[in-house]
Length: 235
Length: 110
Image (tube, rainbow over all chains, first blue to last red; front, side):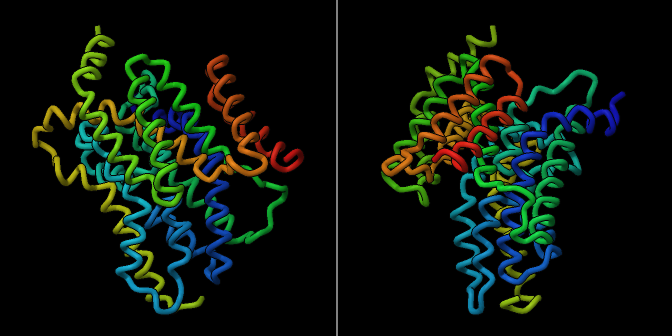
């Protein structure tokens, strides 16, 4: 009953939106990397060892003569700094997962984070196996996408312009699901408002870190009210 | 390849380790067995909806609002995805229709 097979069967439908999104943004990464002269094997290697959407898009530009490792590390840090905050919501869950824990930490992309935090665990399935399957499936989609891109280069069977909207739509859907629970509404609005304000001030390339700091600051200030909201919903 | 294989591999390793480090920070600060402070537990609860709100904006960050087509395709596609989802609560339907509609709009209309 509580086998990996069951967990995989239950996890797969939850990951289909990420499947669609990752295949296509993975393909886009594979194409970009191939254009720099790297075969699909290199794309697969990077997707296996790095596993970050925007991080890998940026990383493609590092493969030029004379690049400094300080620059590589600094720029990667800048684009991925938001991930520092993700683990806070998953401390208990991951600390329970034994050997799988560090893979779960490694694979904590935006999309996987959102699924892990918001998907209801179906009945008749082991929670840890279920979460692990979601994480592994998501990375498989990412690797497969980048390999296809690396092989096909710019050849796509149809005009895929705009397909990246699948990721936006996924977050919109998860947002609505969160919104259905009343206690989430104020934090949701804090997130949107902080992001819009910081986007206006700092511009689209640099607004994520200030946004995260603003969100944490506002959540701290509003702790008393928001904590009451959490308690009310538990009654 | 513009640079040799060893350097290329080291770049990948550097990017991978840096990315992993950002994801590992909370788990290094609060390892197993260590009591998680109440304020961090509180943050863990309220941070998820806020981050998801931020990610919606993040996905739309490069939408040209001040120039043609003024973000109209994005606005329509997000609205259709949201309304469809409130109505049917079917992830695949909402995401599928929203995405195909967006593709048709930017390829054929705008």
